[in-house]
Length: 189
View (cartoon, rainbow, N blue to C red):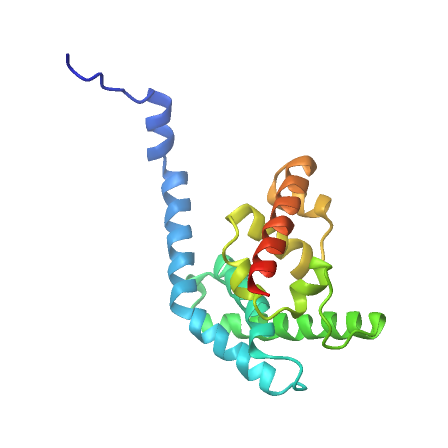
């Protein structure tokens, strides 16, 4: 008996081959290539920022915010303007590191917990040295939710608007991301 072949629906074929989807795929590929090419550079920038800070801030603490800023800069970068990518991204990457320091110092002054880890994932997300690599293990929607809520200080509802999803779906992404991070942090500890 011959195997049955499936034929894609005509509208599916049109959608996959449309110029807007091809352009979007190309833009995403360009973004991914920029990130791959510059991730080591972003880590070096994070280490340089950390070297200027008190000893309780490590390069690992700065790597997560630097990587998220690199992702954001790569998404917004327009090579047609003639500006080299590193010149475009340096302020974002350094700024994200210093913003993380400000958030961390504020929390530590408010809670009087310098150097002490807590079970609260939101505080651990800033201080825990194993977290930057853990964040990259999240699925893209969960990663974006963590980025918007904790790097850009948006509420879950505001992040939902930015991502173009319902608040209910955003809440699901947020909850799933925090649960995954709790598991990853627990495994690293």
